[in-house]
Length: 388
Image (cartoon, rainbow, N blue to C red; front, side):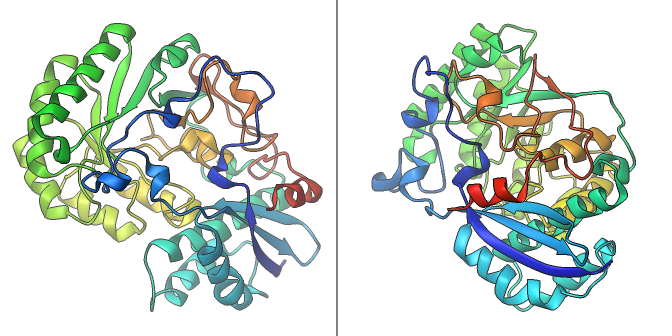
């Protein structure tokens, strides 16, 4: 069976599902809370990420076989990624065997080598996920069975966001906060970060794991000072302190806070980036995004690397998509999954799921859909309705 067509198109943004039917109790935290970012030193863009991030749609990618069966992949960053798929990669892959995913993945790495980097990896991810979805449908098996089968009955999840009371009410036993302040805020920022963590530790109690996401916003000095202040609150890990390419800075941070669990890798896109960090033991938890880091094939390679160094892999927002759910249930070194809560308190998770076939956490746990492929639960008409 060969590939007949590969076509990418814009879909609604953020991969967070459609509008909810239930009225919210209060606005979601992202509408008002300051979050530290690489732009925090610039007053005009300091408070909200939405003030400087691109307003591109997300991306759907339909991979269709000769007999009309199809698979769907998804990623982000709109028109640039769509152009890479439709104008370069897609046409060159027509006629390739649908089942030869490793071969096609390797071809895409070579095809994009003259301009490789972040956006090319988003494009590769969308095609790769579409191919895996198609392969599962052809074989009549869920993707997690194709990559070794489940290693656990269900996946424990942590909720990411700052509406902590809502997550605890929903039964989560782990939650990750967004760090509000960075180096531009100086000692005052350190004190305010500590106040947030202290208040949420008091709210959550001792039986809940807390993590802190710093989203590339800090420098080495601020990170060290913050780690020292937050020691009493027993964080499970501190994440993404530095800009992603600053491996020397990460090495310095690792040496200065050896007892602190460090996580990161959301903004690394290639297996080489992860291999370099893992071989130097710069992180304890690596966090590729399955829609960014060259798809399921790329993340399987990263998971194997991590396991060889005795490290954990926890996908960025892995529980928000069936793609990440299938990966997470099948990887032995994936101890927990991230569920980014983009909806407001009071809105049931099943009202904002990505697709009809996307399970949502219940009491902080999920079981992946066992339908063929990724079990997206979509028809071609549904996919057309998603387009913008």
